[in-house]
Length: 382
Figure 1 (cartoon, rainbow, N blue to C red):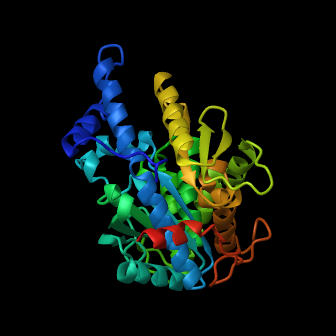
Figure 2: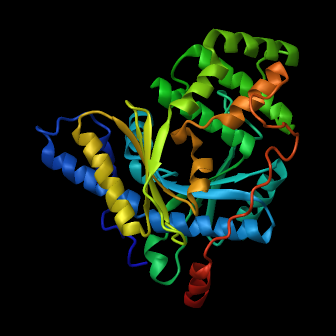
């Protein structure tokens, strides 16, 4: 608990900071206000680290209890993304739902139902609302189940009560689609995730979402095309965009390195830095929140000081680096599952060894086996 930052500012101060950082102000002319605003915004974000971690471990416990295979991860929202959202949305900074976010990736639609129902019925944290983008997909084809909670702390953790945490629950196929959109957008320098960018790519992802939803027997945004017409149009788009080749080239183009981790060591956090110019990725492990959060803030500050967003930096909590790559494949140029399912759907063959099955959607992975000492300690304190 002592390693996690607390928060000493009012909602009014947080919202003032949000208003300042959303603007494009000159550091030379507004240095004092900008430095204070970023300090407040960064502290506000850091104050979500403990609630995010706690809720993620609750998710792991639910999955283990229900014998559900899958992976979990958590991340603090990037300052670039916070600024972008403030610029696009009337929502004030203290009202953001997803400063701290947890992600659950499972094999089947049934697994999603189990996790969602357990969270709503049994979580001690205050359930606020949910957005079921699987039952009602977004217009761009996005499918995932989002749930919003207010963290409820006990004992020393009561200081974090009220922090809002968002949980995303999705299948591997839904995850492959969403991260492919982000990955292609990162490489093209377009905000495809926000439906801004090349019309051909946006159409391809919309139609691919229909195709993937059909595989899962789920609702989708209907383009009005029959299955044959949709697949014909996807083949045309592939030809126009060289989409499958591009997806493969993205994967080949990324070079990534990580700091060596000794056998037996288990970092809690990983700082991922994606260089937008060189298309290189570096991964740095951290064994506690204090140094991880400090390095996160410094990396973003250095990028801001450069006067442009040269890097995408994100701090992620995951149990293993392998889970990190699976939870955030867009940072590593990994679109393999999306590419193979798309190729199977429109051409009838796999580009790699992937074999398409209705359910489950991917070979089962071993469940996470996390250190549960935190849970026993928490039980003693509660």
